[in-house]
Length: 368
Image 1 (cartoon, helix red, strand yellow):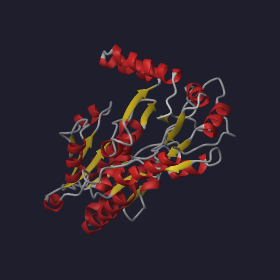
Image 2 (image 1 turned 180 degrees about the horizontal axis):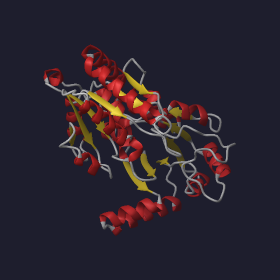
Image 3 (image 1 turned 135 degrees about the horizontal axis):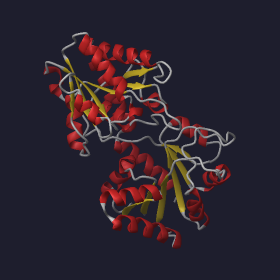
């Protein structure tokens, strides 16, 4: 079997179980190909990398995929609704290609023209998309709400969440011997991730003379300048963008709490939160916004906390709630450790790459 992954922007991290399966079962999956199909994403990456061959390679692959359909090929399509490239993938379906649609989108209601669709065009593509979903070989959704919605439009819908390698992301025994507590943020350093609200929490902690706390930021984005600006005034440390799993795992292992204070935007909320399962795998309690992804992952009050306030409507309440939950975990070491242990167990049972590899094997064999 050959796996061909089509993705809007290219996110290998979303398909970790497939790459793991390829490494462990090379006789079953001979190779994995990746194609970025979104024209704007291709142009942007080609210009940024000064690499015209990257653009040519992906365009050539898209053309070849349409010209010849291989019976051994399984095409996995990661595409946000209602992207116009559905017209291309409908042609692949019509040619008899095996297509698995892969999505994290939870809100599927084609009766509502003005639903929170990610892509909106003057042409109404709802019927085309509805036909695409009913015609593909199967659908894999990473959140449970999306699965429930998609069962209205397709028969073969499977829940397979994103994954973490729990053998890499694991707790450290040195965590209890530090003189300070580390609160960690990992993600894009942008407004929608709640960076400004988190900085307000840090300012309040500084004013309250709580001196045993330090905040680490990992990621990249326009707000890194703001974080760097505060490094002399506030207990913050910017660690840069890290793309190496082993280095990132060591950072989690040396932290104590993870916070993910995301904010709703039009057609966006935290649809999953891979950093949550990485942190839980490392034995950290997590604090996250009450979005569809974190609600799927975090059992509020058991292995972490959900921030109920909505920052766009109740910004001060959101900041106060985040502050209170951080201080609760800082002041209660037993609760912090217990939540971390529960999160670690959940990560091993539901999100480990080996567990979800087996789910993918089952899906692929059902579609053979």
